[in-house]
Length: 166
Image (cartoon, rainbow, N blue to C red):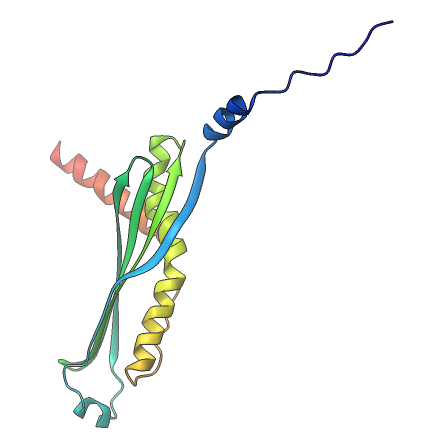
């Protein structure tokens, strides 16, 4: 009669090594890195009845903090003007620390330029809206942003510039 031997179980170290080789993406921390509000023409600006024109600029950057750990920040600048007169200026940097491990190098840049800003954007949108309300103005609600399209456009421009140099 044959007896069944239990299958060999991987050791704890082998399981940890197998898990450590799996790709991982972890949000370590989300925070407001910087924010500012300027109302250069207060209090007169609150007596004006003209609707200001709103200009919005959005950008992002990333930095390596240590092996596999990155800081990504989303910069949002909102400028409200009536003619040449600035009604208010809001600047916000919403940042996060992200752990990206066991991911092929060619995938790191898209993660930092697309995935991380997509995570940060709702937080930045909330901060901008909150600041505008607290400043005594109607809320500024940022429309959704397609970071994938922005990244693709930047890559296209880089390719065109590289071709122009040759």
